[in-house]
Amino acid sequence: MNEDKENWNNDTFYALGMYRAVTQVLGIWPINCENLFSKMRACVVVMLMIQMAVSFVPDLLVHCNTMTGIIDALTLMVGALLTVIKIVVCYVNREKMFRIVHAAVKDWATVEDDDEKNIMRRYAARGRFVFILQMGSTYINAAGLIFGHIPFAGKSNDSEIITRGYPVGSSCVISSNTSDGVYIFKYVLQSIQLFIQITGNIGGDVCFFVIAMYLCSQFVILNSAFERCKIHTNYGNQKICQLIQRHQYLLSLVDYFEDVYNLVILGQLLANGLFISITVIILLISLRDGDLLGIFESLIRLDLFYIQLFIYSYAGDHLTSNIEKVKFAVYCCEWYSFPLGTAKNLVFVIMRINRHFHLTAGKFYRMNLENFKNIVKLMGSFFSVLRLIFVD
Image (cartoon, rainbow, N blue to C red):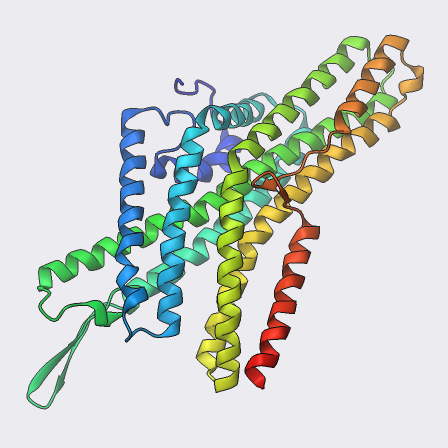
């Protein structure tokens, strides 16, 4: 794949600039991910994430660690592995992602109609809002962990006590024989890994959302074009054929999108389901013991896990609904006044949409708001059953 030659205007930077920045850091920017330096960046990120996952194994085995510490270590281990999965999947499917991103760049460069631009900007604004909110809040939290655990020295009687710890993890796994240089190196390394994991894991989620919003905007524009058929008398068979070809092209893009992300969504769904279940148990223990800090931390974790699933569910639900609206847009146009051949072409559009599109987790679980509600209900029932156990 060659470097994209399309000119990036201000709207393109507004819609895709953050997506490009994150994927370039990870080495999976679809336009030039086959570049040597991109491959090197991707390999370095994968190796750092694997090393991070391995480094937290002692935190799961030591007896001095608290339940919260174990959950933090487990969350970061799984998060590191999810980052690896997202990078590998996007790289393996780089040609499909290239087609989607290239289409987005081309559309932003060529769109001239003000109404179409406004639709694309509106959906791009949603993507930017989620991107800034998720990445900003997570980076701030990571910065708090890093700077909040910088070791300090205090004196007790005639001896000096050095309190050492890492941004995340138990301090009791640090050997007393660890030299200052080794300790500082490990502290800085884990800090870098923490930011990389946020960029790859949370960044992967919001990049997914940015692309999903672009695809939604294109179907909204297509629906509007079909609906305008009833007020334009000069719509000929050629124009209808162009809309039909555009519809087929967009369907191929969403199929690529589903092929790329269904395994990523499956991994995220399984991981978040596990963490939500464990966090519910910790929340109940904290409620029983009156641990206000534990209650607050558990609620924050639940909020973060549910937001991740909601992002995928909202995008999947919105894509499905906008795709299905095409047949209503076609039906509402004055198809009965068109020549017979043109009207038959519109019938094929409706027949094509009868094969419903769904964004899925592993090709079997549909990601939409209805199933997100079912997940919340299931976790609520799980909470109710466990509450009876812990209260009694």
